[in-house]
Image (cartoon, rainbow over all chains, first blue to last red; front, side, top):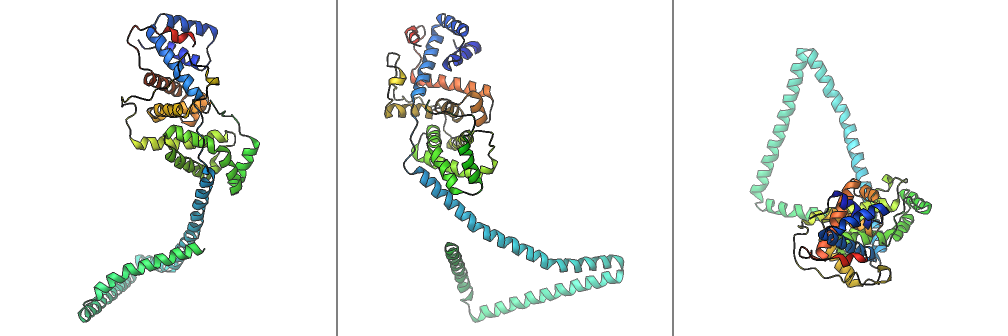
Length: 181
Length: 203
């Protein structure tokens, strides 16, 4: 038979040395009537004694030094991250600043276009002209690429080889720069 | 029980904490040297493996350093640090996905019998400590954390509940169940009707 809630609390308090003399009497009277719970309480006391005498495990030698080394390593990489984050933020701010006049012009054009049909016509014409120019540029670029391919069939292979090599060189240069700083 | 929790933080510790928050790494070094044993022991008792315990202890200190500005000085620094370590270890244990207490393999026997000398007079052998650790390793993470904080750090139920972010009654229940499970593993129940009263005579 398992201990009921009250007996369980009493046993717990007994293990924690929190039993009043009355509660202790109550517990022992109850235990006298139940061999199973007496055995259970004996097991709990045994565990309690073992745990109370279990030693603290000593830290391995040099642990503090390794913790501090790992910490400074982490801080170092954080410091290195900070300038690049700053550069990114400055770059984004500059791009946003550069786009501001463009956005202003586009906004003014739209406001004018909404107010007059002829201005809207001009705006649409301008957009179409720009798109046509872009299409023409892309078309001529493709033609030039085809011409190069015809003259030098090995060019695409060379390009595919050069791209990873260039990326590797850039990555190495970046790492050297970081180590130096 | 080999350590005292301490409800409030020593002014010197607080000074080191404040200096560390300001970026003084030497002050943080002092904190590391002061608490490395406590943190490592907690990690070892929870994880049961020395290499992993060391890694977890390192991680706990790093997390503490990065969150020093969140530390509430009205709370014990040690309690705060151990709560970081214990929660980190519990996360690691949960990731292991072991079926706790599902294995019936025999455990090494612990030789503490009622006729042994009193614990205060006994130098517990390393083997016995290892055997206790094997028993602990079989407990579910939450039970194990409650047992370790109670027995190795002498924390009250309320303090343990605070560290493990649960209620006092949950901690009471976990501790009782953990002691029961350890008791059953340590000393399998005798056949019904067996007399066990002599064990109690010294209780």
